[in-house]
Amino acid sequence: MTEPSGARVLVVDDEPAILRVVQTNLSGHGFRVDTAATGQEALEAAGRVRPDLVLLDLGLPDMDGVDVIRLIRERAATPIVVLSARGAEHDKVAALDLGADDYLTKPFGVNELLARVRVALRHTARPATGVDPIIRLGDIEVDLERRRVTSSGEPLHLTPTEWDLLKLFVTSPDKVLTDTMILRAVWGSAFPSQAHSLHVYVARLRKKLGVSPTARRHLLTEPGVGYRFVTEGS
Image (cartoon, rainbow, N blue to C red; front, side, top):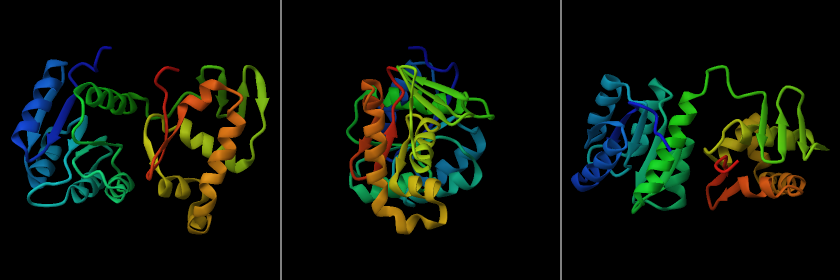
């Protein structure tokens, strides 16, 4: 697979060995790489070089990585993939809720890292007007304009909430969505009272899409965090 030509990646980590490994592998695959070892250096570099993607460690010597995420998000929509030894559920949720696009726990494989980078960069390459009004995943077709879903040409009947969930998933492809993100997007200000309902609605949606083996393969659970709608292999 060919990487986006010349894409610029800012790698932020206070471990020199990690910086060297990530920089070497990204450079070897055609990326331009800048590095930073502290949160302050990361913020300065993000403003100066305007990277296409930030790979960010959370355990920085001068500030917590989640604060770096928040400050970057206040300035730009640059994709952020967290690379961290912190594997606890609350760390992942906090980073994703603040605006990180993905979370990769150390130690990680280089091939998986490159795959996550490619996915994040594909999101930024999409036109600002949004996704195609008709999204096809194998035998499933989602028509966003007509609010219609078909499987092998046969209509699937979804409730308004099930439709809103499916629309959110297919228009946020390959991105981890935390429970809080989903609740806010679908239920708005009423989301605190609906927290117990989310998994029930997802289960119902899966059951209706379950007539399609393709759909079952794409709507994945991120344990303890939320959900991801995967498009690889569509």
